[in-house]
Length: 189
Image (cartoon, rainbow, N blue to C red; front, top):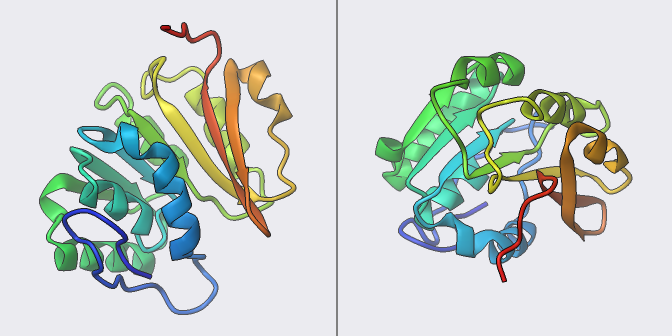
């Protein structure tokens, strides 16, 4: 796994051995960032279920102003921190080694995020728990984009009942990225 573009371009990132994390492949990461690239520069980015930190590091490399990495596995967080040092991006990052729901509560009233990315363990309903929390949270505002990496069959039809709208889905062979915003956002022509 490597950083694809920006200040840390082509640097190889460490990943955790074993199946505890599923690093997003370079090809899928490149597709994701081609979609969100116009929103990255100057953004405040939240990387939930960070794994090795590849997504948040890519955002920082491409010009995000700040990124917060949340990962409950201490070994994975050690990998995130090592990757941040190696890419020389640690000055723009903060890390939280704790449960995602605890981290969200701790961040409340301290941060507002432009982009929230989450890659929870597949098929365990964690994305729904996070969205339920965010539906009534000050961590998001009307322009916040929430991106969830999920198994291809994960259903997001409930998003509207939480006040969200699925604005785009990008489906890959075995998984997908789902892009979600607050419902009722005014479009400027």
